[in-house]
Amino acid sequence: MSAIDPSLRYQRREQGLMLLLASPAVIVIVALVVLPVGWLMGQSFYDGGFTLEHYKRIFSEDIYWRSFLLTFRIAFTVTVLTLILGYPVAYAAAHARRPWDMLILSFVILPFWTSVLVRAYAWLVLLQRTGVANQVLERFGLISDPLALVHNELGTVIATVHILLPFMVLPLYSTMQKIPRDLMLAGASLGGGPLHTFLRVFLPLSLPGVVAGLTLVFVLTLGFYITPELLGGGRTIMISMVVSRNVELYNQWGAASAIGVVLLVCVLAIFMLVGRIIPLDKMLGQK
Amino acid sequence: MALMSAVPASAAEQMLFVSQGGAYQKAQTIAILDPAAKKLGITINQDSVPDAWPIMRSQVATGKPTWDVVDVATNFCLRGGEQGIVEKLDFSKIPNAAAMPAEYRSDYSIAYEFYSSVMGYSLKKFPDAATAPKTWADFWDVKKFPGRRSLRNHPLATLEAALMADGVAPDKLYPLDVDRAFKKLEEIKPNITVWWTSGAQSAQLLNDGEVDMVMAWNGRISALVKEGAKVTYTYNQGILQSTSLCVLKGAPNLPTAIKFLNEAVDPVHQANLPMQIDYGPANPKAYDTGVIPAARVAELPSAPANAKAQALMSYAWWTSADGEAAEKRWLAFTQK
Image (cartoon, rainbow over all chains, first blue to last red; front, side):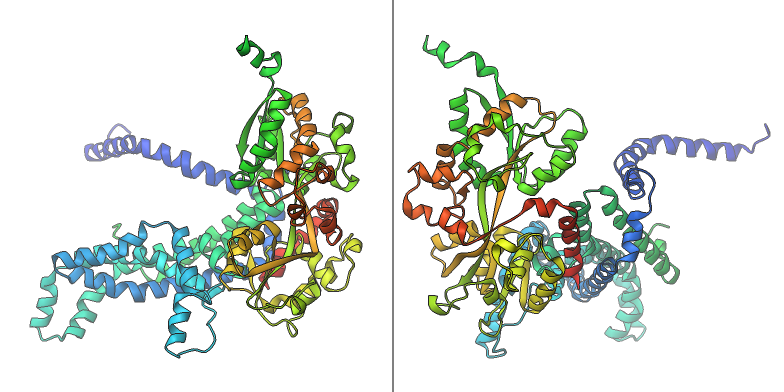
């Protein structure tokens, strides 16, 4: 026992020191995240005593499934749209010269600093029957009856895409900025056309940013509340709205937290599945 | 000397009153709280919470509530009574309540002010009073009255309206035939553009022309009318609703709270309220004080003539097991 390899002992001491240094952060995370989430999970099995009643309700009433499906469908749509819209913007910002890149980024960041509530109302004004969008379309004779752009799933998706776009653009931009220009030049000098070098060199190198953006936007959309509440017309009932209704209806944290636990499990399952195909940890630059 | 007499022995008496804040709480401070405090020689501290019910529960659960009197939707007072969160009231100590109809009171609550869920509509869409919609049956009749509609995303008052649309008389609504109401709601569902969730939203929808007909609270539509919007509403088949005052179980200043309850429904204070905001007094005697001008009386939801045209919501039914089941069914209804 006493004959321990000195290098191993050194390594152990190093680890112990690291643990000590990390302890304040660990304490904060335990106090602010682990304990409350744990309490909430505990509540989901509690109603005067141990019970599976809250989970039984989720799995026996199809209204919950409808909301889960809708939420994941919206999250998927929003994620794909933000990628399609965000990639060119990030690309432009990463390649533009000095004042222009700042201008592009400020267009991305300025709305980011505006309250979600304000932006949701702004979309309401733009998209409603008598709103700017419908008036313009009518003026140009493209439509004769106002389109139903809001108070439905479409309105929710439009506003959510706008609100979450910075979460796609910013990680993309930071990844793209780090891609050395020389590589593109090298590709071109070896005879690759612009499209070819983009597809074979730039795109693969920007993938970590893509995965980070997709992850952020997808997870954030799952928890959206104000936007579907205001722009969904009362029919676009996302899971966070079901959580709040459950608190109101059943007056129990358990009923609501059970939904939260199911959502958490679904998200983790999805990430594990995606992780099988794409090495998430490598993409996110952890290792 | 003057200073001495301004501080009577009872100045130490105080209590905490909780209401919903905003223009409403400001109006009642001027009309009721300040005059009542002055008359009783007590200090009324205030707090405002838009959604008091969960806090009422947790206040009592801690065993040391700090709130005394709460002004909330009547169903919460009744539910609080059932769950031991609200004190049972001794009406012999609240003589002012004697003039109020029995339906305005319960063992745990006393009606404080009335509002109404009414049908509002656009005057641009229905300019002629003779051919404008007048009943919930008209609201449901999409052929005769084409246009976009909005209802509240909540079963209270909405189920009542559906039953009236199906031909149930306003005074024969309770116990609600829940199945029949939901069946009738399924009928109008495809024509509901928005299920609104906040009072401000209901007014905005009508004002912006997003919908042509809406079930909304009278004060929201009358505010639009005052701003000059081309909208109007009818009290016909409106659903008369109230907020009530109740006292938290174990309130720290129980005797003061009861004294205040009596003063809060004093006819003169009550008559002052509609002079500040578009809500009706809960004590009908307020209409006999002469404080409210006749033109104003005609606008108020609880005025005798308007009350007669409406259905009075039964909060007792809504807090019953059937009522709670109907409330839970709503979520499934809006989702399909």
